[in-house]
Image 1 (cartoon, rainbow, N blue to C red):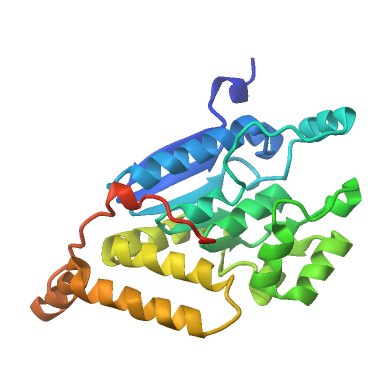
Image 2: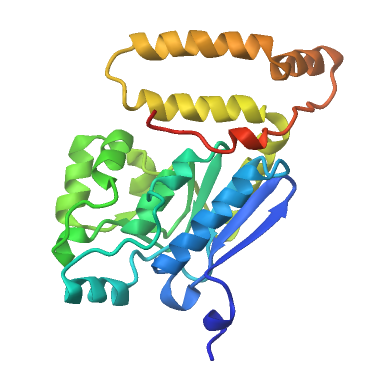
Length: 274
């Protein structure tokens, strides 16, 4: 029996306010299958509802982040000629978690692996990381909303290039076009990404980060500036009346560490497209 068969497809731990999620099918380059997806979303749910978790870090075990869909699963779909959905939750589920999520990407980040990385709010990548959407090479379309995600993060022209060419994008190009936020040496990737998560977990208001995340994804759907401005004005009223702003100002004046309350479990989820 392989080590993979003895371990869950997703591992989790809590460290210094940061929930760490590891995609754990290293023998398959963390290829995505329905069991991994269900366990990943379950883990996100648990961390979203846990007040001790203030930020989430997602990474892959072994030599890569996620090589895309498990080819055996794709073969079964092709043989049946139809799609079978085993988990009712949408693939953009991570975007609806009311806490910041950071992806630490190394090695291959292909297909659904890239889609899940884009569902995280911030992306760190190691030099040597590779990004690709090989769907047209498999006779498939831009599934999982990738045409929407990519076009908003890197623009229509670059999206068209990635989707139609199915070429591999190196980490340095990914940084240049806005696909990732920061690069790190492979040996420093986890430490850099974890330090980022630990800092925002320790210093930033959980309520404010949740609200900002909701604003960002809602505003991606809005063509006019009028609606986001009005919504920001409304949310500012909530912030001024709430405890987090009072704590932020008091800590600054008193020159002491910040002590924001945790995110209430009833705010664990948000609707990014509401």
